[in-house]
Image 1 (cartoon, rainbow over the protein chains, first blue to last red):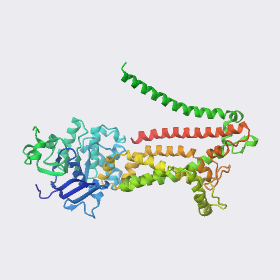
Image 2 (image 1 turned 180 degrees about the vertical axis):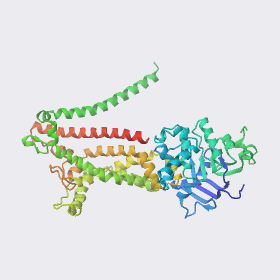
Image 3 (image 1 turned 60 degrees about the vertical axis):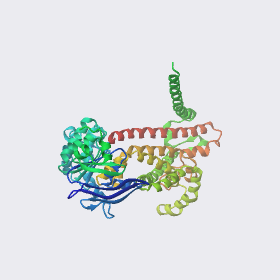
Image 4 (image 1 turned 120 degrees about the vertical axis):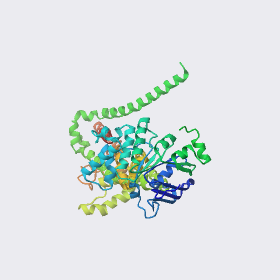
Length: 254
Length: 296
């Protein structure tokens, strides 16, 4: 499946983890301002693929990447590509929330600060706006100075989302962002994703098929380091064409 | 009763007894040293002993101030030298080094801790002392001497290197990778991530490492004794010689005059060391608690 102006375009991507060929000749276009989900069994490479988008594998020196990932047409694996500005374009939400060891306020202000924002008023405004974006503002507005680790885990995950949004990314990468959350917090995050796709391109790794159906426009099924099938959500989940996909989504009740 | 449950009870109580025994041992050592220094304490006030720097055993005058200051100078210099270097070294090994390099460097660092103190002492005498005497001290003072608290501090600093580095590596490895990733994924550089996330999160651990290193440094005897001059005086600068408490005990115990007060004085020195380390640990625990609450 191709799109006219994909936000991210992966071309002939291969990733080796030591001797292990973890991603095999991946080609996929991620559409602009849509939610695209990667589904597949544990260890199939969906998280690995997600992390190639913001070059988070750079710090794992055993990892070797071949091929191209084009972000707005530019290859982020180009020798001259500057990794911090690439990462700034993407907010990452990990499996469990990892608030930075500082206050709620400082967590949100962290991104703007490392990129040079010093103006107190602007920071105040940024913190408030993004906490409102994730519907956390009413819950924390009176304790912005207290440690972020004191929030509940669901609140922490929303804080991490707000923290990612504070650097004005274009893309949100979610790596099973609800896997540690209770149903209520999960629902909140899902609602946020649906709201946020108006402004952001969202790529979501999930193992919950119903979640993929609820929030995503497109779904890719990944198995054993390969993209088996990539299609609009309903089509892939209800009428998969490939045999492997059929086996995986078998029993998925709509 | 079920044999399984009896075993469980037995295991629990055995371990309790062993734990109590080790606590008791610490208390007994403290009490024993105190008891042995009683003859000295009966004749002199504690304040006089601590504040006087006159040491004339033949006349029955025992002032410990010079020895206490010697200990503090040498330990202080050692930490000031070792901590920044160890921090940078540990940050490099844990955050920047290629895994292959890490696999080579870490065992070598550990190997350093296996070198006997006396070898460090010899290294101090052959290398550090002449270095200070011929090159460093002449820049600052008129009558340079190599045997000094600086020499003691340098030797001691190098000796606690491996301990601090391996403690720091342990501390850094406890910081989850995802927390670093969170910072990196917002476009932070590696150095920003180290500065704002790694070091911040590790602060309590870094303090514990320093405390353990200092406690170890306080008592280090032979290597320091060989290079710091053993002159009974209160060091006024890093280039002055000093005479730390452990050196006092090691140099004199066994060859004391038959004066019972002398033995009592040396054991009081040991008691002082014990108390200094105890207080130091206690204070740093309080500080640690505060910091932990602040950053979590």
